[in-house]
Length: 138
Image 1 (cartoon, helix red, strand yellow):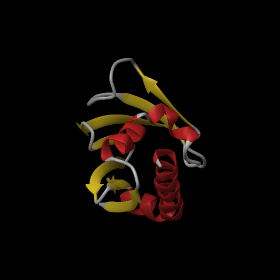
Image 2: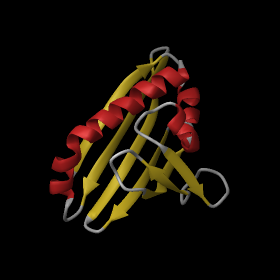
Image 3: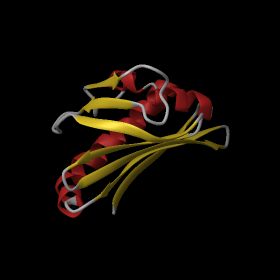
Image 4: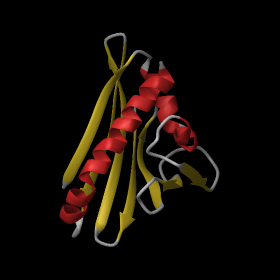
């Protein structure tokens, strides 16, 4: 498995940070790494919720929420032939604010080559997401 993480301290309570994280359809408003996210189906953002994510330099990807800890974290998964990419988003109490972490885990037959090919852009996009989240929440 290949993992990339980006953490940032945010001067806002975890519930505020998580609310912004969970409002995925607005990510394009605060991070340059997302051009659009469209939820598929209605209902709450919970396990089983799906969305099409559009990012510069990547093909559109279908993501499905596989774990949700209300107010704290969510995980979603996108699959492609030979790849399973897991997105991790957490908001944990840290002093008077929050330690937010965004990251991905890449697994599968083509994980190694894909991770090497996309590492620089993945690191840049995760940094955009962390910095944008901080700016949006503070």
